[in-house]
Length: 361
Image (tube, rainbow, N blue to C red; front, side, top):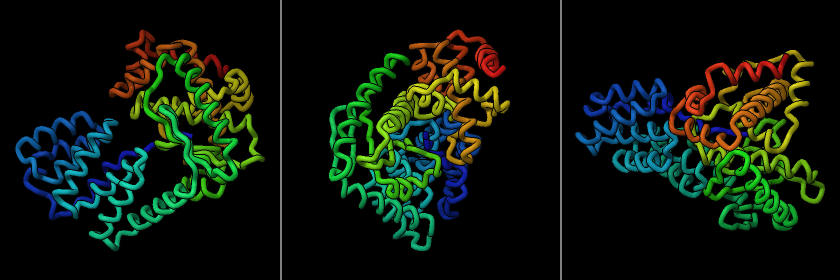
């Protein structure tokens, strides 16, 4: 399951303390409006220009950080948000987003430090305290686990129980990486972090729905049962989450939830033809427009339909694009919509939808 880091522009903007509303922030009103509208490109341009006039305005750096986050430019976002907090430590909204990005990028120690400093400024903030407690618990769990790493993967697991699974995980990841890369036409180079948890650790740390067998939230997280693990299922779940990681490496924004989940199911691999027959029998189709975000908020029955439909859609897409699938993802990562990206690859508007609908008739 793909668990996106949701941009929190609206919440963050509402949290800006009144004392931080400097004159430069007023001059950048178009930037705040663009953030509220989800237009990261426009917001980034406005804040960039405003910062040339007032480079020490914390709210402008905050706005630039939110804009960079919306654009998937997390390194730039972290730099801008850290500068905002340095200039104005009471700008708790900047600290909140900074910590979330740091944790999502795998730097949980930095995230904890950011929230500890923010909580010292706002000791009565219950959301900061609850999130900090979660991350401290996660860090404490990871301190008890063993880690194996190479240049492509880092796998963390309970060495007493899951050493055999840890070795198997490396083998599965390596084989799946090359298979997926050949199919989509790209081999992302970012190191991918994987943690094998006990069932209780997984639920406590991820808060994933009961039907979830794993998540990717910047790190692959999978619950396992040691020697009792269903190995074929372990392989499928690990490959599913690896696909999410590879897609995110190619495009860390702009990819619809149904495409993320569809590609992950496609490469497990699952049977798209069988999924199509099940959907026909059910007579239920969810508009893809309703499946743009992650599936974590869906109930078990609705999620089952969403996954089946996404699998069929991904199958149609990969059959049509082949090794150009990576190019499609890269276009979306640069800000093109799914439809615009298809058009750039020579797929006429409506061609994909027509091919998909034929699978359901």
